[in-house]
Image (tube, rainbow, N blue to C red):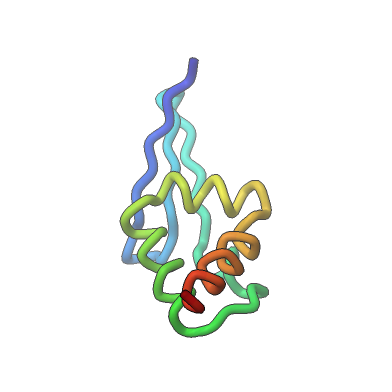
Length: 79
């Protein structure tokens, strides 16, 4: 099993994913989120996700599920 570590890089506004094999994957948050349809509150939650749970943010970005996560976050505002 390959272990993965991720952290938010505030200097590049990116999520840096490092494997213990020595590979580094940098996901630029601006590029990953540029085509998302979002409002202010889900955007704040998305920013918090990248900072607080960077591995989950990376997984959603790589799987192409960021919009689905934003839509679910947006629907929570109605409650």
